[in-house]
Image 1 (tube, rainbow, N blue to C red):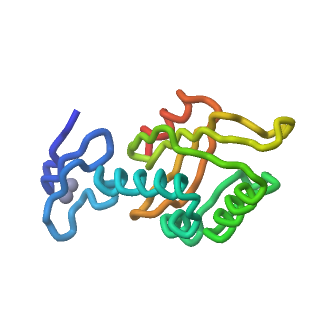
Image 2 (cartoon, rainbow, N blue to C red):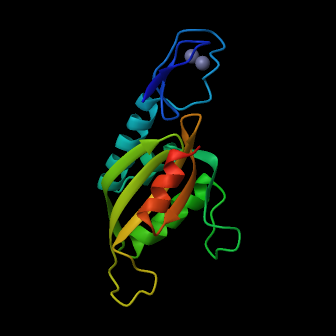
Length: 157
Ligand SMILES: [Zn+2]
Ligand SMILES: [Zn+2]
């Protein structure tokens, strides 16, 4: 359902602006725009396809986060995140984006992952990543095992 903001005229659909007003100090400026999320989703997909970590890194905030505080490989910066992807690629792991969905929280990416070592204990063929977007940049990567939980997280900001 699309609603028009009564104060500025932005059209908002489930927390995402589908049409933006031209007002200085727009009261909806904190909400992501459909256009920016679609653009970032397309760039993420292209970066994975080309195995292009420079392009991928350019989409990340300087202090992008990935992994809980107690995770052994937690990332707290663009450099950490790109370095983790670099290590995965160097070990022969590859991934392709098979589906993206956008919502108030950012972009939910479905990844199909190929693991070279079939005995790798962490291997999962299907991976769900929520890329949280703030101010046009990916600020966090959150992995999900469960599609419903991932979609619920995507729908709340
Ligand atoms: Zn507005
Ligand atoms: Zn508004």
